[in-house]
Length: 530
Image 1 (cartoon, helix red, strand yellow):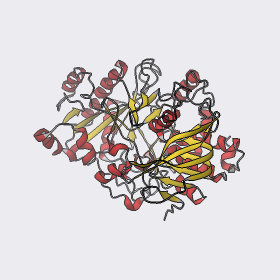
Image 2 (spheres, one colour; image 1 turned 180 degrees about the vertical axis):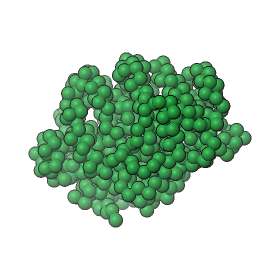
Image 3 (cartoon, one colour; image 1 turned 120 degrees about the vertical axis):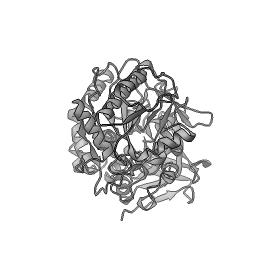
């Protein structure tokens, strides 16, 4: 049984009005979890602060309605400012690692090379990062999935093979996986090696503290140095009941609240005048999708959600040309699928009758490499709550159209009876030529083109100078002592792959460097990688 000592739920438990620690970590997802374990193992006194609740295997019932309400930001309904893109992010202990689909990829070498040439990040080469990828993969049991794919994934492989396109099997961070298929609602077997079952309990058992239902409102600054932060109490619904109720004094503060949450804390701390780059170059992997009605049952809700992918078009026009994309499949669960099929009444009812026969493809667009793909901007609304404005440029529209054409082509090649591109003006198409003509004519209009993302990156980007970044190559915020960022908000572009493994490896490197700078007792297995 996994133990979670030293946990205080601020929605129902008291905590001192002032707390003093060596390290304050804001967020318990991929970045916060890795940092918490490494710094705790190095003998430092750590406090982790998490907005969401602590939910464990006994709470996970494979129930979509319950999971989206308890484990996701804004009940899984977070959207960009103009409502054109739906964003899925975790909000619980373990963050998005608790609810993601376990897909694990190393950062592509072409992405790292672009960071080196465009942002001066020579410390982030394949050679320097591979030892940290090795460590993360061993620590979190990341390995190529050996079980045959479910029919949803197999259809992608079949279509790609018949077209002569490349496809591969994914790596997943699981141990003892029962192939239940409901990874997005939390793993009831503790098979998914998320931060919830790996690094967070390790840190807690080494003496770290965890505050849940706690929001960091503002950093405490004195003479150019961050001294800690103010924490608000939240209720069970995540609403603040006591603003700035607890003062945390810390020798060093780490923001790991994600690529919307971390920039928001800097903005609430009135640091935008220090660095105008805060919140800018926030990138998604914008996703478009296509659903096919197959002649046999797919049952896309069963089996590993993602196990096959195709990079045939990831670098289709070089690194900085037209946007490339990775093709994967999403799991098909009734609630999630019904929200994607945005029709109503009899038409919606008739489509859901085909639900067991649906196969779905999605395309993750690799944003941030083209001169006109500059991402979005995190800002604060009138209540101090973060929001993301994400304009859709012409280069993105072209990418969506290209990806939709290729995804439907794969589905027909795999034997689809009819295909439905996710666009409000689309319908079922019975032949590839018919779908091709229709997709080329679909309007490039927000809302009508159904776009989503589960990957948010950037907003506190790494770089050599304050002119092109928020953080230096050590993850420290330019112009401030005592403050680092250790999450996906560091990435100068999107990655082109699912981001969790990149966060694990890069944060392992940065957290170990921080422990060394603080003259802590670093475990030998980590120290030898410096």
